[in-house]
Length: 304
Image 1 (spheres, one colour):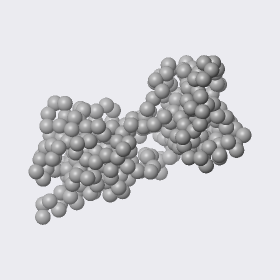
Image 2: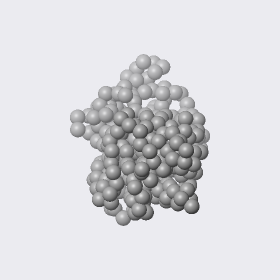
Image 3: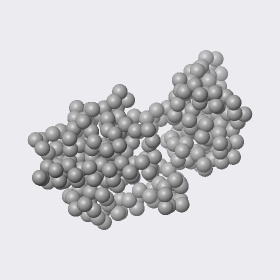
Image 4: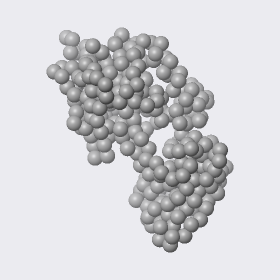
């Protein structure tokens, strides 16, 4: 029987595996798509301490190799649910049921996409879902931010410090984000609000060159010359399979504090999938270590 089954092979999940293995536990790491998670989409990572610059894929590959070298078992499959089985847990995949002593949920989030032409093809070549991660690469450039909530407005404030001009595109006539952010942006000469409008397409062959704009009120179309587009129209946590086992908040995030403990003893949550203020590479790694050590303590207490 596994001591720890980790669901999700992003930064949080792989860090949890490293800490669990170093504590002498038998660990299974399950990933449904690509080990590394969303960081693999970032062409440059420059905000991880001790690493001046690395591509997201290189960062993820190095972590996966480290996890494998330490002796983790890796499995590519989809997890359908997790349930209690006395003092143990059962992880149900598409192929089988896996008994274990503890579970760490590190399933991350999915950024909501616009679903417009060229969006998917230009991810990492001007299309970004993380201004903090990628904004510095667009210093001196014209960029667009899409969204009307506080995240989009915060992104626009951040980008306006680096970029020549920032267009904030929102489908309504007023922003729903924090008022002080709107006021801050309104006072900046290099910020333009494009309201009642949506992005109809993203243009560019090898990199973003412009975005097509459709005004929802007038039906008129226009084009903005930009080198980057930062999409902040929300995130969806990947927690649907666990809603019957652990408590989620209204947005679908697992209710867990800095100790990474969920409402179900023996099940822990790490990384972007849990309730937290900051979702970055460093906080994901921190969660992974906390969750793994908490799982180890739980096992030790069960053995007393």
